[in-house]
Length: 546
Image (cartoon, rainbow, N blue to C red; front, side, top):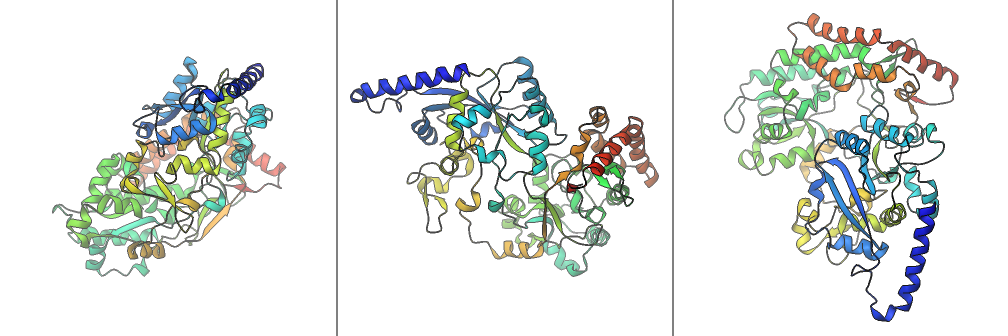
C-alpha cells in the first residue's frame, strides 16, 4: 500500500499547512485549492442524459467537494455496456472509478468483470475499505441475494478479497411492491363486449376474449383497425399472455426440477412447447401483433397512445404516461383498465421473488489507480443516508424541503422540473455513486387516483419471497458451461422461438425448438445437469431455487 501511505502523508502535510495559513483564506478548498479530482465512467448506455449543465460548479458537486475535498469528473458512454467494458479492458485506458451492471449468473457483463478481477485488472478493496470505507461495508451484503454474494461478489477464486462495491441496492425494508404490472384492456371495448372479467382465469380464457375483440370491428383513435393483443419493445410483455403455461415457482434460474427429481433446462420443459404453440396460435390468427416481436419502444408507445392495441401488457404508470396527454384527452372512453392476474400452470396467481437483489450496479477501481483513496473517500460519504439525499434531491432549502411526513419534496422552480431538467443542476447526476437506497423513506408519495387504486385492487397478488441457491449457479464449475451457453445463448433462443411463433404448423414450430435442443444435447448439456444433481445430493442442507 505504498501509494496509500504516500497519500496519507501528503494529506497530513496539507492539514498542517492549512492550519498555518488559515488566516490567509479559510475557503481555499472550496475555491479549488487542495481538491483532488477523479474521473468516473458510467458504462451504462445512454447515461449521458445525467450530465449536468455545469459539470464543474453545480450544487451537488459543490457539496460533495465541501464534504470530501474530492471533485468528480463524470464520463459517459453511448455504446452498449458490453462493448464499452471489452474496449476498456482491451485498451487498458482506465478512469479512476467505473459504474457497471453486474446481473449475476451467466450475464455477459458479470462474466467480463469477474474475468478482469481474476486477471488482476481490478483493484482488491479489503484494505481500503477497512481504512476508509466504514459506510460502504453494509452495501457489500445488505439487500442482496445470498447466492449472488457467494458466487459472484465473493467468488471463491477471489480468495476472500472484494473487488466490486454494490450500488443502488434497495434494502428489504425499503422495498415497495406496487401491484401495478399486468395486462390492461381498453375500457370501451370491455364495456362494448359486456365481458365479465370474473370469467378470465387462464390463458385459454384470454384467447377467447381476444377472438371476441378481433371480431368486434373496433377502431383506434385515428379510425384504424384495432389489434387485439399488443406488445412492448422487442416482444417485452409477451409473458402476460402465456402465464397459464408458466411454472408456478420457477423463473429463478434457467433450470427446473422434473417430477422424478432430476435436473433439466427450461428449454426442455414441456411447458415451453405449450407456451410456443399457444403463442403461435395467437400470431397465426392475427390476435397478437407480429410487428411487436421486433418493434422499438417509440413504435410501441405510438400504438398504445392511439389505442391501436386493445390489450397492453406493462406497468400502469408507463401506460398512463403514454396516454395522459394523447389518448386520454382525445378519447377518454378508451382508457386502459387492468384485467385480473391469470393463473399459472399450478392454478394460482402467486408471484415468487428473490428475497434479496440477485444482481445490481457495481462500482470498481481499475488496478494501478493512483486515486484509489480519494475514490473510497468520496464513496464513503455518498454511501451515507445524507449522501443518498444529496445525490437524489440536491440541497435542502434550495431544491427541496423535508415535509411533516419526513419526505423530501422539491420546492420552487425544482418542483416544476422533470428529471431531465433536474439533471442539468446535478440532481440525480451522481446517484450511480450512492449505496443503499432510501426511496420508501424520502420519496414523496402522492395520493393515488381512483383509477390507480382500482388497478392495485385488480392486480392484487401474493408475493412469496425466496432466498437460497439458484441452481444455475451450480453449472458454473463445469468446464463445458461456456461452450454450451454460447450455443444456447439468449439471442439464439429468442431467434428460434420467434421462428417457431411464425411457423406454418405446430409440427414445424416444435421442429425449430427440437433442432436447437438436439444441438445442445450433442454439446454435452446433460453433463451439466448431472453435475448440478451431484452437488445438490452432496449438500442437502441448502435451499435450492429454480
